[in-house]
Length: 279
Figure 1 (cartoon, rainbow, N blue to C red):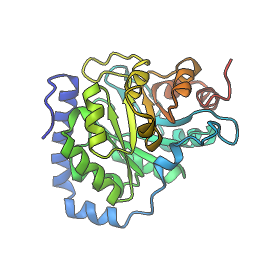
Figure 2: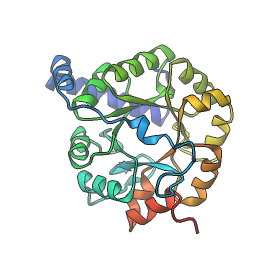
Figure 3: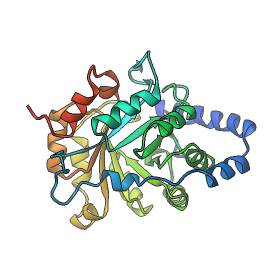
């Protein structure tokens, strides 16, 4: 059962529900499970994100970046007119990204599973399927398409459902990035056994962005919880100005989409986001 929101988020979830029903008619759950079983081994998403104890990567980087491939968004409309997912992902890999996120939602983000498959074929980095996931079918589909991790959004999932979907992902050797926004969602995410915890700086009910939100949410974690978790900040990050306080907060990784998709020089922006260019 999903939590009713009656907002843009609610409409997004309803659209995904309709798309899943269509997908099931064209490809059965048994077929998807068979494809998932035959998929190549995964790459550790969580392992790629966790910053070393020293705080710096071998090249001096201070932050790991999940670089996102997306064609559009509900708040910005179409972002990229020329859209070659594999080539974009290659540029991210060459620029030092730790992982690649791929939007697969069709209606507002103009995504497709084939985009994830193209990215998987193009890079060796771990690949995250970013989608409004609430069924086992979607997780099996992600594994079949070559994903190494999936996104679970606490705002659309009950605690038990979130735990079951996370457990299934891990059974399939994938990690689950569990995303929270509201403070009550943090407790539910921890209760669901979350290992990779993301805070969305964008309120999915209003689409307003506040980059200080990450620090407020992670500030509720105990030192022991921080040590056990991989911490990720998502949305509203465009340069070092937003990244610097996150480094101080002990965040392991950031998820950046729009800024990278619009950047005239992807490699240069990745250097800045990683803390290698801090003017």
